[in-house]
Structures are given as C-alpha cells and as structure tokens.
Length: 265
Length: 161
Image 1 (cartoon, rainbow over the protein chains, first blue to last red):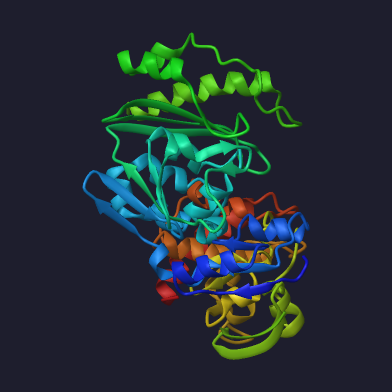
Image 2: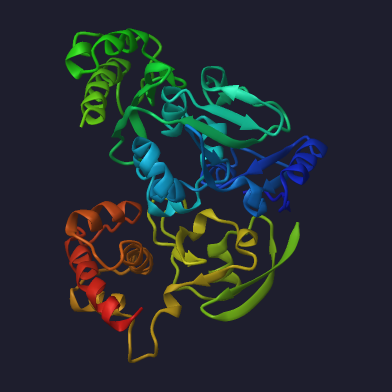
C-alpha cells in the first residue's frame, strides 16, 4: 500500500471540504473495498478521508412509509435492525448475507452503493424497491443512480448521506453466491410496492439492471409460474472463469423464480 | 505521513507512531510485538487476523491502525485469566481437538466468542457453520471447531463471559 495523508472529519461539511480541497483524495466508509484496493496498489489517493467519525451519517429511521438508512450504517446494523426487519425484511436479509460477519461489522451501505461493484448486493435492493439516494447536494432516483461498471451518478465532492427505501408489500432477495468469494454470481431482488412490481438483477451484468418482461408478467400475476417462460438474453452479461454469460442468463431466471416464491411465503 | 495512535489493547493503554497506511494487525504484531494475531491471506478472506474492536469482531488486516484510535481492542492474548485458566472458548477448542496446525485458531476463537455473544449463548450447528463463513481452516475440516463452539456457548454463559 502506498502511503497517504489521513483525515478523520467529524461532520459531512468538513468531509466535503477535505474532498474538494484535495483533488486526489478518496472518501473511506467501512474500508472493506478501499483497503484491499489500496493494498493491491490499484489506487493511489493522496489523501484518505475516513468517514468513521461522522456520527450524523450512521443510523436507521422510519419516516412515514419509508425506511431511511444513513450512509455510514454498517451491514450488521441493517441486518439486525428491528425497524428494517419489521418494514422490509428482505432488506435485512440481504444485509445479513453480505460477505461474512466481520465484513458486515465494518462495511456500510453508502460505501457499497457508491462503489457499485457489479456483484454487490445492495444495488439490487435500491433499484427493486425504487429507493432514493440522498447526497450532500441532492436526491437521486434509483433508476438514475447506477450508470455502469463501478460508475454512479455521484459527482466530485459528493457523498451519500442516506438511502430512503419505500416499504414493500412483498419483497425477497435470492442470490447464488460464488462458492469461494461469496460475491453474487447472480442476485435477484423482487419487490411489489405501491409503485408496482420491480425485478432487479445484480452480479450478472456490468451494473444492476431491471427485467421489464418479468415485471409486466408479475404485475398481472405475482407468482413464479408467471415468469417461467421468460428467457434472459446472454448478450452483454458477465463471462469469467466462474461462469459464462449463458450460465448467468439462466441463473437470472432461476433466482427470480426463487425470489418470487420467497416473497410469497 | 506519521501519526500518533493511542488505544486500549487487552485492557492496557498503548500508543505509538505509525504511518497512515499501517494496518491494525501490523501495529499489534510489529509495533507491540503481540504475535498471537496471525496474518493468513492478507486479503480479508481467511479470518486468521480477527480481533475485537469495541466489542465487534473485525479483520485486523483490513482496518488501519489509525481507524482504531481510541478504541478498545481485544486479541487472543487478552482472553485467558491466567496461564492456568483458559477462556471457556479456548478450553473448548483444546478439549474438542479443534485445531491441528493452529494457524487459524486465534481468529477462529475470536470470531467464535463474538458469534456466541451475538446469538445470546444459543447456537445450533447450522448457525455455527454459517457464521464461520469468514474463517478458513485448512486442517480440521471444521467438524471439531463446530463441536468446540457448541460446547463453549453454555460454558461461557455459566462462566459469565
């Protein structure tokens, strides 16, 4: 790891000030991705701005029909939150199945969503539940947030302060984890909310995507039988030593049907 | 960048000068000379480096020493009451032959204690196996580790630790 200057601001304003004044600075939330990246010398920030001391960023609140999760909230806290379990059990389940217990004790929702790893779990929940991502400057709809491989709508000096998830009538997340890394080979989050049915797929493509054909079929009939004949094209899906694009395309169908069955339980 | 850090390790106040990039495990092993915490994979996979930071199990190879500023750190060296009296989890590992080469053991024991406490001393086999996801052992096949943890849970409860 190359050395860097370390900062531990106490407020969002101070963190933004540091990020804006140092063009090569990187923000760090839980560090579960950034520290391994630095170790491999895949990044060389001049400064690391540790958000661990920014208390205002952590915590879970219920606001009307929404569960608002602060950007620095750890996966373990989402997984065990009574509020999340009551309002959106699928979200608590998802958080409780990221990485391993030690990673869940450090990793945060804001870090995961801002990093937008193609195999991350949270983007599936953000898109399927039609969540809103709040930053220090604006609110961004889920469909406008994830732009591509490790790419989001976040600009320079912009931090995720929280994510607001509408409660779901029915929802479930099912993933097929890689047996070694435990990252999702394919994960499907299915949700039926006041806004309709959404099916979001993570792990299969460059970034999270929706399957409109499944959404339309499930809107008419929310059962796994309704989507059993829908084929996912393999074009553009991820292909690596762990599985071909065709394999992942097939898994999307399998995981989606399991997710619908789980949501109906 | 050199930074002063201060924290509590196994109940004792410690401090030192580190680089910003110094990992907590390096601080423990190389600055404090506490080599009970192991470095296995150095890529957050294997869990040999697990310690508790403010009561939560973390992989000390994936947290900077400066991030633990002011924290209470507990390592494998801080568990036993004395040379003759092991922590119930250590005792259970010994009784159940839950180690062979022993390299993963410090991390296994630290993860196991956190697991038992989070589950309020009530665990079943499936839960233990799932909870061990972040700790790799290449000798035992895990069976005796699982047995040890299941045996330690009630022992920890009755010992009040």
